[in-house]
Image (cartoon, rainbow, N blue to C red; front, side, top):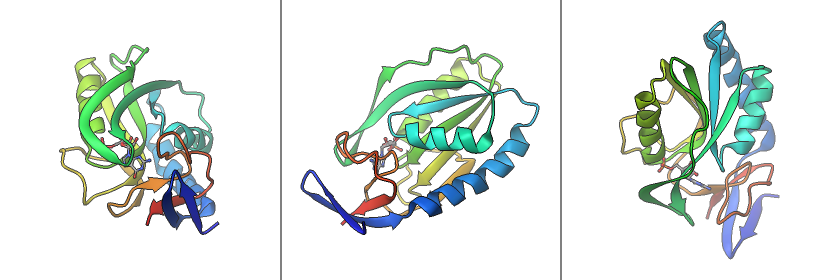
Length: 177
Ligand code: 5GP
């Protein structure tokens, strides 16, 4: 499928499943080396990062723990700038080397606030690993350690990305036309 229509919105293909998977395998190699002997705790930012986290954890082939949190800043196809914590972190992060698995960094408001939160809880180190990043949209001072793909400002769906809950199961990633 080169195009897809969801809830009356038209999307065209941006990244194929193979491109995404090859890139995740590529990212996993240096990450694995960097985390060797560090006893990391992975944190998946729900809902969007669920598919990416599953892919990345399998690419890393690691027995390390994976925790889940849900912080939300998006409604429909736009960032609200406000953070809502829907599922809090249920894990002791004190002294831990944290690796945050995020689907996309857009304005950076979600990651910025979450990092500050994890720092306050006493994490030793924090790495951000995201599948997509929109460098032209970033407004917050965050350093993304591993990025799958840098994209423009367009809204995307597929491969974990949704529009009002739909589209997460699409194999490829599509951008709003
Ligand atoms: P930020 O806080 O960086 O502005 O936005 C991050 C969150 O907004 C992501 O975790 C994701 O849930 C959502 N988001 C940002 N851009 C997109 C997009 O293009 N498509 C979808 N589906 N969600 C997005």
